Length: 113
Length: 113
Image (cartoon, rainbow over the protein chains, first blue to last red):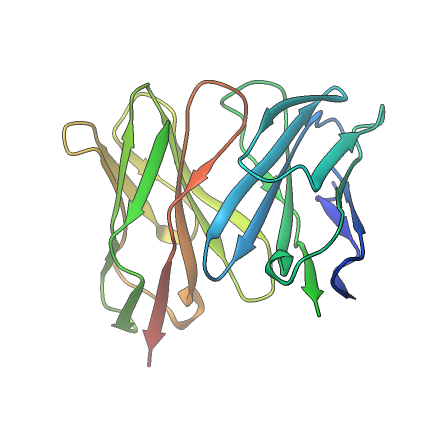
């Protein structure tokens, strides 16, 4: 069974640009969550999608957005990039229900210059 | 709202020695508790989880954790560590609304030969 796949794994952008990250969940998983990991702030929840609907949202500015498609694949977008957006962005998928384990991808490492 | 405190940012230990990584949480609702491990340049892997029932939880790679409701703690232990256990360990809590995890700051376990 394939795991959570995130693309691209590494990318470099400059301030002011925008970026789109992609996440393909494990087959059959309908919940997809996104987390930002930085040395200073640690792991922070961005948002969660279930059946194409955003179910929860973390405390991030509106420049951070996401969506989920009918096949459960998800994308997140960051517009007007800032230096502080440099981070590892992790996607996790889960089966239905609040007791389900989260399965994480290897992440997309974004560097903003 | 929940919060998680991992009391030690780094724990050095010699190979084959026992180790305990400490985690305390606060929450106004019942929580589910997790320990994840992250190896360099990888995503998070679930070590173990407490959902309900027995307070002593056994996980992969010989790790175990004990849920203590009165102390609001969920410390991770291993009786004998190996060099390959060198990694960063994250404690996390989840309430009963969706799959949003709140993570602690992480503990870097450094196993020395």
